Length: 109
Image (cartoon, rainbow, N blue to C red):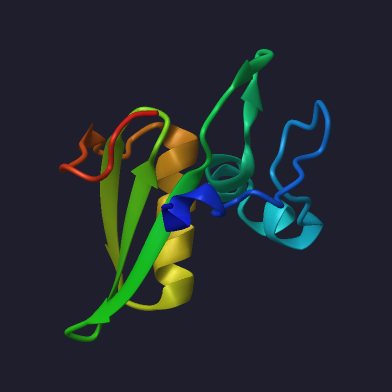
């Protein structure tokens, strides 16, 4: 028996829902980040939601975006959390994130 047999077993996704979870406030402030993190249906095709890892390091905020659907990652560094989130939002909206193939472990579903 594996622990993975029970991971997510009780998760009930909304039937036909486009997003994993509603969050009107975050969606209003960061629509691109919200879509990246929560959108699970695109043009009637299932999509694995994204993930963001946040790390404070050497006086900066480092964000790593991981897209499980494509197996790719992108990075952004800001001076503060607000600066980092605003920067990622701007780059997502402009399509200027530098996406790269993820390392082993961040595989495409």
